[in-house]
Length: 115
Image 1 (cartoon, helix red, strand yellow):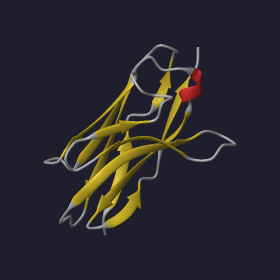
Image 2 (cartoon, helix red, strand yellow):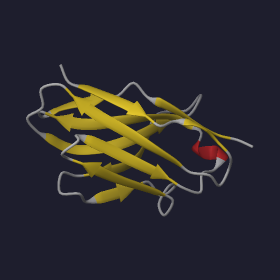
Image 3 (cartoon, helix red, strand yellow):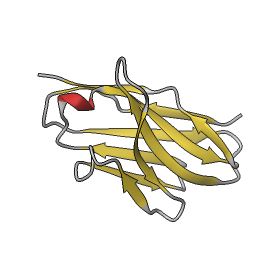
């Protein structure tokens, strides 16, 4: 059974930074694309960023230039460095990854941006 576990969420003031981490565990033969999504209260889940197995990255326009996605294949981890946070970044953030050619989600970690 493969699991994805996020950590690093919390409360931060506008303009602040947070780093989210998502670690994959279990019997893992391959890890493909990894990414982050978020869901604000009353809204649909939206894509935030993706990093491929070749470490190419893509970002939603709303976070481009402020967020950085990276991965550590040895540690089976994907990170999301979030800078210059805004109140509209408040959401539950979910890790998504293709592991052993199956798509999976983490349980989510809450990010709240407020003064």
